[in-house]
Image (cartoon, rainbow, N blue to C red; front, side, top):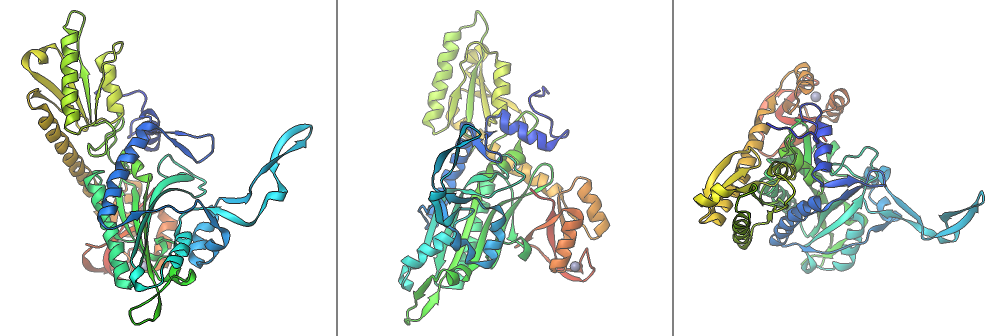
Length: 495
Ligand SMILES: [Zn+2]
């Protein structure tokens, strides 16, 4: 197999491989601002395709989009004690509103104008609970005003010291759902419903299998009663938290005075939920499916689903081949597929194949003089590079079927890989050895204490990723302290 020289093989250096794929597939680039990234069109289209499906799913579950400001008064953040503790260490703060020119060592220099110092400093939102529940408090008076089901597509800033394209950047794009309900039961139902939406999206569109379950108290969102998560395993056997849904209880409603009058005229605090996924999902798709030749994208979210490469030499009937290729493109486009016809003249087919493989296009159609004669095309599938001859007749149906098969196979492959990297471990020494020899999801007994969880993390860098909903009851001994445990939890090293 011809290996691309532009990409470091996964087995050699997985983090390097990841960065190579992101840059070579033109998904994103480093920006002049440290920790921030520029999302290039190929990466942004991928995000838009994911965004569109999620947006549809949010609306189908009754939510509407709204927009809240980028800036949050500093005092808002201070209101919820756990929340401020969770976010204070990674905040960008606006202190002035204009610059002025000052002569420093004979040179004109821009400095903040002291006269423009803000009375109250502003925080660039790291998340929007505070400002959104402040607004909800203005809008809600009666039980009739509930529930409020809102989603916001936005950028947020969390000042990260160690960043990685898509996975952890100082500024990132996301959606944050925020809801208010009259009862604890409704809020819990909503929290679970949105986690299910995320799990469905990850599996059906991203072809990434996920665990669903609860986070431990130490891993939950700052200010939440509890946090549910979807958790995926990447090809280097490190876990990736792909989405979270938080039941906030009445914590925020209490501090932001979000109250309503119930049917008996009694004033009560509302119950909130919030849930989010981010451009990190792009990183998850890359790491779950990519190979040593570049990106491998699931057809349902791929920016380009099919590329047609005409093949001809001097003397062949180039015009007839190009005409047929254009005809096929028209047919596929009419069937709702995103198609590229690569008719660049001064480039050989092999170079074209490499480029489209790098970009992760799920299906390549090759069309040469022999195919034209026989009325067939070659269909080359990106994930396993398998080729087949298919009749031109009914090509749109054939391609749609093949894309469906690719989508399904990608999920199966990823699930098989994840399951093969999931191990039941009873002994702490074996646990440590496994982490250093391949890693994966390690299912181990845990007594439930914060101390054991913290000790395991300090000693091994592995964390409890998820207490899965479908975990079986099983009596055992905590891997760390030997105390009684009633079930296993998923440990892993994570991104
Ligand atoms: Zn223990």
